[in-house]
Amino acid sequence: MNKELYLKKYKKDYTEQDLLKLEEGYPVQYIVGHVDFCGIKLKVNQNVLIPRFETEYLVELVSEYYQTYLPKKSNVLEIGTGSGAIAIALLKKNPDLIITATDICPKALAVAKENAQKHQTISFQISNLFENIDGCFDLIVSNPPYLSKQEDVPSIVKDFEPNKALYADYNGLAIILSILKESSQYLAPNGLLALEIGEQQANQLKNQAKKHYPKAKIWLKKDLQNRFRYLFILNNCNKA
Image (tube, rainbow, N blue to C red; front, side, top):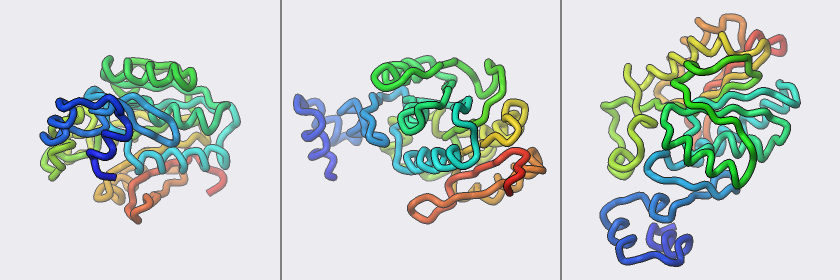
């Protein structure tokens, strides 16, 4: 949909200032103040990434694998929740899940908490990856920062969306590699780790995953545009 039509459809009280922002390249979703994600209306602002359809498909895949491999009342940890999109959508689809959602940014968590109030109850925690986390989880899921700082990114993204949620050191791999390394201490036997990743990182990350999970079932999954965008690890799998 044309951005101006989108604005006029979803913000009936739009102003000339809103139209000016649109002309200057400001993301229309931030002007409107909300997006639709998996059929859920979520508040968004410049403290959180704008959820994308690739992440909607991650929710679909995780829900499918949860129903196949994991206990009904699974304990879930989402790392880097942002707007709360993944946690809220997973709980809507799978109401028996017990979810803890974390983020390093207090302002992002404030948005997530507001979104969760309208839909479901989720436990939120300020944490840098696993820093403030205790316990064991049947499912760990994340859409972490995975862009290289040298990557060519559209200005509408790099100029307005939170850079800490986009970029990672070591060619975009640093945070995902930390998750792979540390998650083994928190993932339950036969638990599932699910990550959204960059297409060019897929094979390298799969090989790294084998080092930290030598007995696991590890597989890549393509998105709806036929790109390998997801990494899954089924810990100590006896169904491989």
